[in-house]
Image (cartoon, rainbow, N blue to C red; front, side, top):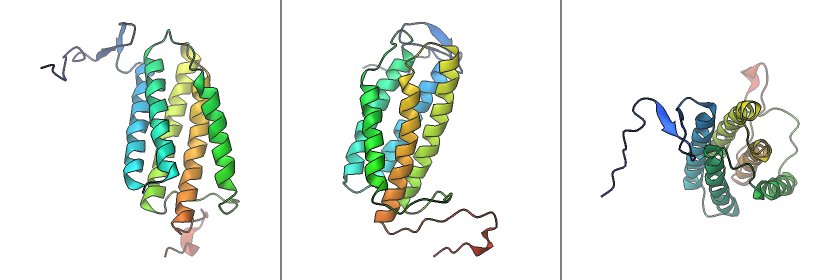
Length: 185
C-alpha cells in the first residue's frame, strides 16, 4: 500500500513538475495552491446547487482548474490553447444570463440564498487567485491567458450568483453608505 505522506515537504519545500525543489511559499506554489482552493470552493458550490446547467458548467470549470494548476506547477508548459475558447464561452454566458436578470446600477452586498452566497464567496477566492497570478506573471514565465481566464471567471461567478439569487427570488441588497435604511426580509 502506498502512503499518502512522503515527508519530503517537512522542511517547507515542495517539488514542481520538473522536480525542482522550491519553498512552499514560492509564488508559483501559492498560485496553484489557491487554484486548488478555488476548485474546492466550487465543489462546495456544486453541493449546494440542485441539478442544473450551472452545476454542469461549474464541473467543467473544475476540470479547467486542474489543468491550470498543473500548468502552473510546470513552468516549462507555456500554453494552454483551450483557455481563449473558454474565456469566449464565459463572455457569451455572462451576456446571456445578464439579459435575464435585473439591470445592475448599484453595488450589491454579497449574499442571498445559500447557493448565491457561496457563488459570491467563490468569486472572492477567484479574485485572490487572479491577484496571485498577476504576481507570478510579473516575475516568472507563464501563459498570460491564465490571467484573462481568472479575470473573466470572477465575472462569471458574480453573474451566476446574481442569476441564482434571482431564480430563487432572493432580493439583492443594495450597498448604501448609511445602512440604517437597509431592509432585510
